Length: 252
Length: 169
Image (cartoon, rainbow over the protein chains, first blue to last red):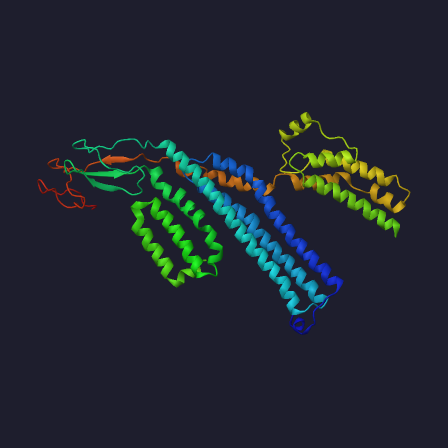
């Protein structure tokens, strides 16, 4: 490898053929990526169609698919690169030229990671909308809540995410309300995936751009604050911590 | 030299047929049918296509292997008939079954996919069971039955002074 540093650029046909082979190998890996996802489309839609109130199966399917795509194809790309590098060294390619080809491997790995991220977020979004739809069908949002002591109407919000103690304006008794488990679960199975879907466009830039990172956290948490008002303060505190603490950059 | 060129032509024609079949819509699209017709190969009838689409031999894309085989056969016949020994050998040695099998491997549902979905299916709606409906009640003093009157009232009954909540121990 060291000797490559002192070599001049190689412009031979042999090298060009190697580049063509390398490019076409990477293209084939990309095709394979699309192929796997295409094949998962039908069974995945079927799974989403049959979801009830949780998305645990979606996480498990995505883990399997990530292994079949991002992990296995990146590994194949690495193996291909090892062969490519040794072929290039054999014909005396310069260090810069090797690096230029190496960049294609890095770009491919970034590309597949980002592509899968989009697939991940979109799939979770679809599943979230299906679950939300199921919950809406299940919940009677017209149900009136009356004080257990005097039967006065209570201003209880059906879509609450935490238990509340509510003092009746009429008789002063405290009524405790525990929301439906399906509604409480919306926060994790529906709202967090939807918040991620909204904020995801900022995530790619966020790796190197502090402003985009702030925008990502802002979009993500503002969505949650708006839709989970019971926990607005909690999310606001989390958001401010992430926006103002430079160490959170490491999480990208 | 010309012999080599003929062999290259044969291989590229085989490859073109393969690519056209592979990149057509599931079950073959109009472009593929036109391609087949250009060779005089017979398309599968609508009934045959529907029967195959509903069969256990699932495909995810591309034309049916049987149609590709029909095109391959015509190409092989065409080149076998030429007065070129090397070419004739290439055409005669073309392993039809093997090539069709390779093609099917490309269009059949991805085998690992079944495992992913069957493993994941164990967790299908696992956490959707046993969920409780909303509850609504008022804490009352066990001693005198007076309701809880303050939201932050976790100590004694405001009416009789008994403990409103029992200690955990």
